[in-house]
Image (cartoon, rainbow, N blue to C red; front, side, top):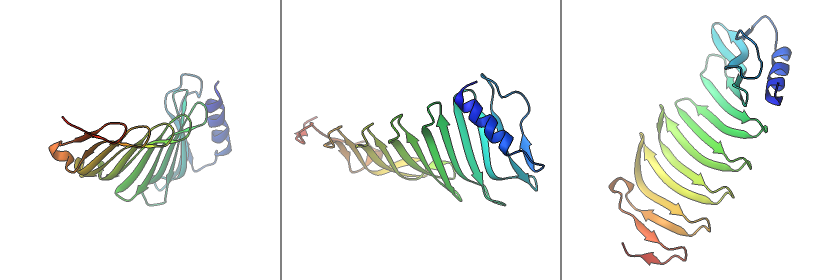
Length: 174
């Protein structure tokens, strides 16, 4: 059994009481999704921990009488691969590189991208920046070279008009 499986079994054993609900089946290598958490009044409450396959542990946190408020995924080497914060209908979602740096950050409202979206190079340098309104790109768009120099710019991404710059910042003719 892998380290994540052992961690999951430890958390499962620690959390056993009469209010906890567990999925059935074994928690061995190759396991499907298995989860443990507390049910109160038919609703998930507090921390829920699940094992997804053999390489991902997911932790979710629910407030009593509320929806999911926090979610984080860990992969084999115990690094965070994704973290979501839920604020009512609003979600901030982050994905991470293996080195722990953020690879992208997006905001969602009612399941659609809504707000600023950024992506990054592995060293943490900003790669792209765009705004979304109800799932559609709107307004300015920026894309940068790994050096941080502006590569593409659009004042109106919906119309897909782009200005292109070389790595020294010189305007390129199309």
